[in-house]
Length: 91
Image (cartoon, rainbow, N blue to C red; front, side, top):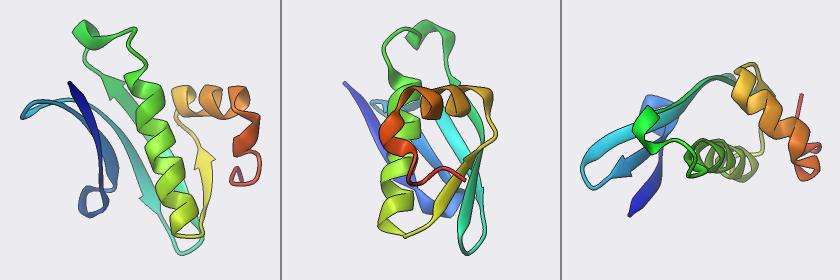
């Protein structure tokens, strides 16, 4: 089973298959804005919606921390364009 974990000390949401890291979405942060700059999932795990879950986890954490997101990563930007409910958090 794939587990999605927020790792604030590494400024990322990470995907694990057991103990193996299989993907991540990273962000840079300031006081009011987090910039999602990279999203990656190992090719053999493609097509399972893992990248979407990684971005969704960062959105969840940003809301909990009362910050906005600038999705510079092409995948994250596409996800924000698809998810109209992210309009409130998108800078």
